[in-house]
Length: 134
Image (cartoon, rainbow, N blue to C red; front, side, top):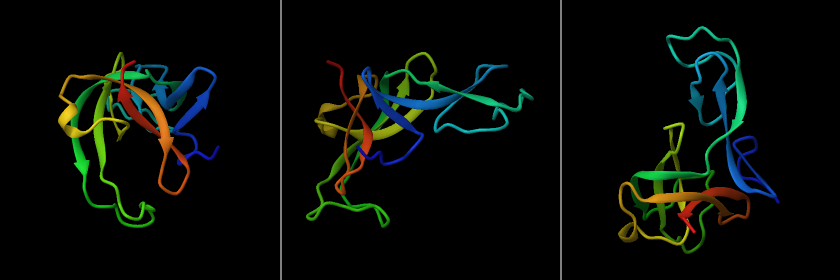
């Protein structure tokens, strides 16, 4: 299994999860993970710890992509429009954008609960996606 972006998410026996970083001093959480200084301007910590992020959240915004993104993205031929959602993760409150699996924009609404899953991009690598909570 090839991941579309190494180090941003992982898949194990518990399912798909996003990898972020958390500041041990002030608790600031980031995604994607970032080494080094805490991004909180009121914190002077110099290291961030890798952490698993919550697998569920609520739709913050959504849209559909009716045109393929430019290269290096490899689009299906013919291109199939995708649904995208920005989801505010439970507990940490950060917003993560991802493709939505099995739902159209007409089936989404702000505040709707979604959970993390995965699916292949058109050229094969696995990427995180959002889906209806089961």
